Image 1 (cartoon, rainbow, N blue to C red):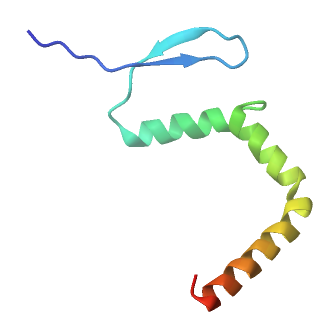
Image 2 (cartoon, rainbow, N blue to C red):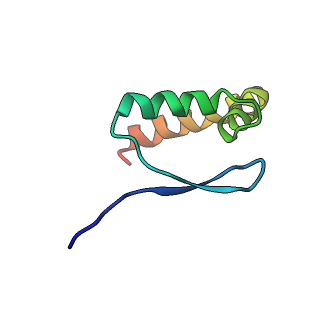
Length: 78
């Protein structure tokens, strides 16, 4: 006898309540649900986006310097 049912445990970040979620077979539905969740204020992705947006001026020069260093290492053959 073989019985399989895949599911995952999701935890609501606001309330901390756990719920069982069955995966969808439709990839489009998965992406739509992800984007819907990402647009909600105070979701994890929203917070990361706000952090990146707010700190862009601080990180942009660092990224430029890192890219310059990687190009120099590439010229040296590393």
